[in-house]
Length: 138
Image (cartoon, rainbow, N blue to C red):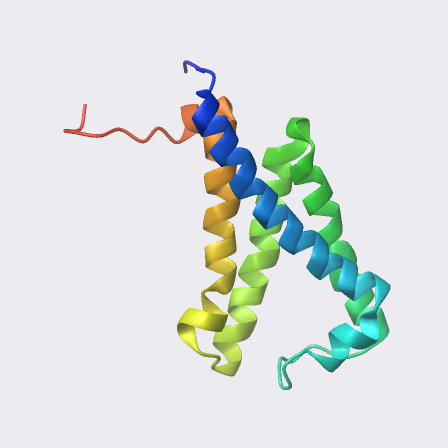
């Protein structure tokens, strides 16, 4: 597989997209860790998760660790895989309770697309693994 460096525009777009996702995930994890009472207060009822401090702390750590891995380029792919798993759990939770499709259920999918899109734009290893070609199949 050939790895070509991203163009300057692709690198800026990838870092911007990744930065938005990272900011949201750090905010979410930080809220659960620093102020679990606030996270509990604003959690929708009926999610099926215990709304208590130990659960919020666990969820905060389960999001913070892969987000930190995603930030560091050397472990970004592992971080993206782990964040995707976390987001899959969030999607499944919202499907289970019958949340609205576009605003709640698919929110994790939107974040996942942004997460991997940002990584695809800035990391030649991902572009080599998932080549997007225009035109007829080769």
